[in-house]
Image (cartoon, rainbow, N blue to C red; front, top):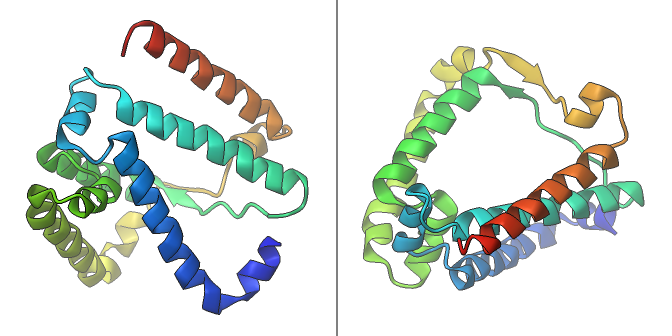
Length: 184
């Protein structure tokens, strides 16, 4: 099924567009496109965003590993490097802290009429992407530093992926329980 989709290049863009709209809709319905909710997360007073991200993480993790288990998909982890991860995280964090949106939530916020997202976030995304594209050739040596390859925890420890997936899911479910019990 997924191999057939992978071969049909003409349907990938419309499918991605439709899934992007669905993703934005779900972010908006979950409350993650509202400035007050995001700032509440940063101030550790509202854990809505954390709950959404953890739910997405375990859904995706279980889903992809089910697909791999039944030979419906293959994992192709992208290699990483500290030289790319650390500056990227810092830039993301600064933008997130200043504006109160991440790239996904800023687009969702524009969709429901947030002018701060439209006039602050969208130009910031475009300017950041253009700057990165212009500087990319000169940044390559920095971005490749500390290359750690395409390692995953199951590969690192030489174990079946489900020995990582199941405990992570259980820990996340326990965290959900703690957050809900505390009224967060």
